[in-house]
Length: 522
Image (cartoon, rainbow, N blue to C red):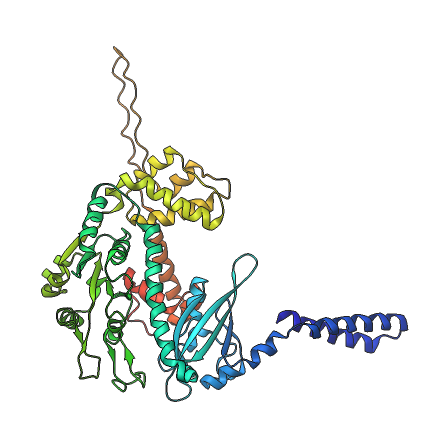
């Protein structure tokens, strides 16, 4: 679209110039240039004109999320006009009592990758649900330039008429195939390690995966609990059935029940007029993974226990029980026994989930797999960034002495960082690794000289500087940055613009770091 606008502007400038030129030869030359530009322009396609004629809704933002363009179909389909959105930050248009909720633009702005999402618009009075495909437009250096969101109301699927039932069946079929294929690929790339406790876990998975027993997977953050859960699913008899993952900590408590169990139409203010299917129903006949189960609100734990025991749910606002057939997997980095004793986690739910317990060891306790994990990440990132890289034996030994509080997730991040820092030369200097991990050097033993006089007493050496691991340092910096920006910002939305991250991410970080912000007025 830009080249056609540029040609129009050049031709307009030429016209102004020709109006002022009095030399016949120069005028002839300018007219010839204009004629060739016109021929080039008319042979091309005016993409703006094409987009303006589409029935699909199109919205374009810049890299900061400011809306640059909507096509006429966007207004026809949603009731939202250019005056409502143009030159406005997309983040200010999303949320309760605003133009819409959901959508794919913010996901693309945060990740720089394509996203497919549902969105509900409210300008027409009755909420209107649509599906949105967000696509990043990148600069030559790979940075984000624009985001294009193409959407269509779900009601438009009615145009399929006689083919609608076949369409729904095909979607269901593709969904289960996609989940199974994706999980297989993910697991074949991620299940790394053959020794010690991991071998015991692998043997246990072999025995329990084909059953329907509930499994509780525990371990520190970053140890690979989800990878173990995925491996159980991949080896189960439900591997071609739905595999639904729910992060109980990422969904606000007041929305969690409706997300899990769904609701009937008119169940509460702001509910979808046609009701909504919950994630439990999406997982029917398949597997449901409950991540961060230790953070589930206590009042919902009762309903979850009932659903697991009876394999039945009732939608919010409904009266008819819905029979289910689900295999449950639960993950947590919390000490659930301690939570039970503190009264923040139900004992009966704990025993219901803990039929098969699996404890995934931290990385510092499975160093026999360390080099295999490094090789795995080197292969992944050298392929991704198209550059060679190797670690020396000294560097491997040095890394093994680090405590790895972030476990395999931290190792993955460190390996990606090192490969990027190698600048294409295939290696990094030892000082780079020392500066990153800051592991104390091991003392070197000195040779003993026989019959030498005792050395003169030396002053006590100064205590070595306190070391700090990589994850802790990053967390402290992140907390300080958030505190400073929040202090200088009018509200969360203002802070999100300054930091170029979503306001929901800031809320999560405030809770994570215990930042005192709740009592401040936005």
